[in-house]
Each structure stands twice: as C-alpha cells, then as structure tokens.
Image 1 (cartoon, rainbow, N blue to C red):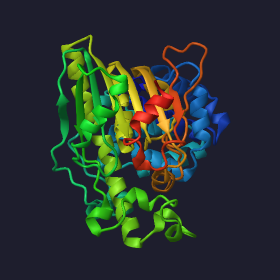
Image 2: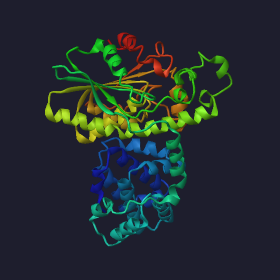
Image 3: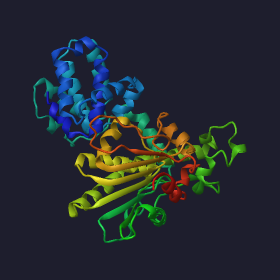
Image 4: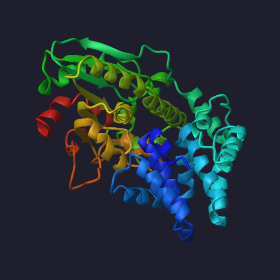
Length: 426
C-alpha cells in the first residue's frame, strides 16, 4: 500500500481523507484493530502533515461527519484526492472480511466523480500490487465526470452561475497604489460586491496610515468578487442596508432578512456563491505574486488586509503558502467570510508573524447570507478564530478583536477603519 502518496496532497485533503477513514473504521472497531487496517491508518497518519496530538482533532471531526456532510466533504475533494481515496478503499475491500467495510467503501467509491475506466484501473492496480499509483492518479487523459452522480449539483451550480451578474472578464490582478523604497508591501483585498472597484484601494491606504509607513509599497488585488444585485436589478437601498433591521425595522419585522423579495434573495445567493468560488480560484494569482516577491527579495515583509470574501481569498492564499513553505508578515481580517475551522487555522497561522481578526456580532450579511449557504457554520467575521492550544507553540496566538461597538453592519469596516485600529490595535 503506497501510504507515502498522501504527502503529495494539500494538508486539508489529507485531514479529510483520514477523517473519512476514521468514520469508516468506527463502524467496525474490531476489524479496524486488525494488523492490516490499524497499520494502514497509522502509516497514512505518519506520512501526512498532521502533527503529534492532532489525531484527536480528526476523531472530533469524524463525530460530525454524518452521511450528508460526508457526501459534501467527498464532493469537495480534488479529483486527485478522490482517486487516491478510491485506491485506499480498494485496498480495504480486497483485504477485509468485514461486510460493513466492503459495503461502505463500495458506496463511497460509487460517488467519486471520474471515469469508470480509472476506477477499474485503480482496482486492478491494487489486485496486482502495482505500486506505480502516481501514473494512474495523475492520469489526465480521461476527464469525464459522471453526470448521473452529479446532475443535481451541476444543474444547481449552472443556474446560480447564469443568474449571477459576476463575470471573470474584468481587469483583475495586482494594482499599484504607490511604490515605496522600503522592504514592506501592503496588499488590500476587497470583499463581496466590490468587483473591479479599484478606487477603494486608495481609501485602504489612507485608513491604515496609523500602522504603516508612507514610504512603503501599497498595492491592491482586484478579483471577481461579485456585483451588488440591488444596483443591477433596480434602484433599491444598498444590500448591506437591506440586511440591517435597525434601518428598515418596519420592512424586516417578522421576516428572515435574507428572505426580502424572492427575486432579490435568489440573485444575492447566486452572486455570493459565484464570488465565494472565485475567492478560492483567485488566491493562486496572489500566492504566485507573493512567491515571486520572496524569490526576488528575501528581506521582503508582506502584509495582507482583507474584508468579507477578501478574507476568504487570504485564507486560501495562506493554504497555498503553507505548502510552499513561504512566510509572510501580518494578516488583517475584517468581517471575514471564511470558515472557523480550528485545525486549519492552527496550521496556516504558522505562515504569518501575526494574524489580527476583527469581527462584529452585528454583521447581518454573515449571520444570514453566509450561514444560509454554509450549513449554519459560523464564520470568523462573527466570532474569534479558534486554534489548537499547545504547550510548544512555534507561532504567536491569533489576536481577536470584537468591534461590535463600532461596526453595525458588514459594509462598515472600511469607513470605520481608523477608529477600529485606534481603539483595538494601536
């Protein structure tokens, strides 16, 4: 069994694979204790990036991995990770007498989104003890997706994509605000419904003057963050105002704020979903830019600032940097529309000198829009970022600041940034 291959996968997929296996093994603990599968799991654990003591976090995750969540986790895995998990399940099927293992493994294999021929090749590879697993897993000659398995998901995503006003044909990438002669770079990333609004980058620069040097380099990173549906459909109050019951109490009374106007609600949801996908895709460009800066100047200090889904783009950028072993300076997150996954943040915080998370309990966009689309998960823009506490900690703790006394809505971070930094940071 080629356990070492797990090292080639991103940490977060390694953890998900291990959690799925723990979920499987918990169904038949006696069979798991057999030498074959006990050693399989601990070999995978040994070769993964999961650190000593983190096995418990995998077990904790497994407790929440109910069947409907398990389907989502598997669907989110890359095709390479799915192929490798398929390979592991074939190994389990061919080396067990446990009907539970066979039935469960076969069911999961049937849900993988790649061609049946590759599944047969993986099965044959295990049967013949062919260890050239990489040639099969990285085989890109067959890229067809099983449309029968994913017809609902694909149709739903296509509808949302067509409904969204967002596009990816804008002028995106690094934008220069001012170039300085120090070794410090500040990069600003706008949030949801700020597609191509580069004019806000100069406002960012002005607002962070308390914690920066005028001679530093200031940049913005433009990405497909979505457009405000209220301005595209008709002349309506700003999206953030619609979500604020203190301004529209008579309209909001008795309603979930997200349900105001059927057309608008669906449009906002479509826009959000597309922007969230883009926040994961556009992190590659930012990661490559940071890597290039480090290659050219080892003394460079890079600070990232992100609001809303811009914070989510930073989150995925940190994932990339973690696997490229690149360190940066400080991260400033405001109303972050990003997962508060304890194990993930524990690892990616090591990329930074310090992470500052500013959150508000008054953020109705995150309370209703984010939590509606993310199965009630609470984002970092509503609460403290959680990390694993250890006696030996090589990185600083994440600094969390509750700015509810200043920020009364999702869009109020930038205009109140001076006061936020003055009261909670400086």
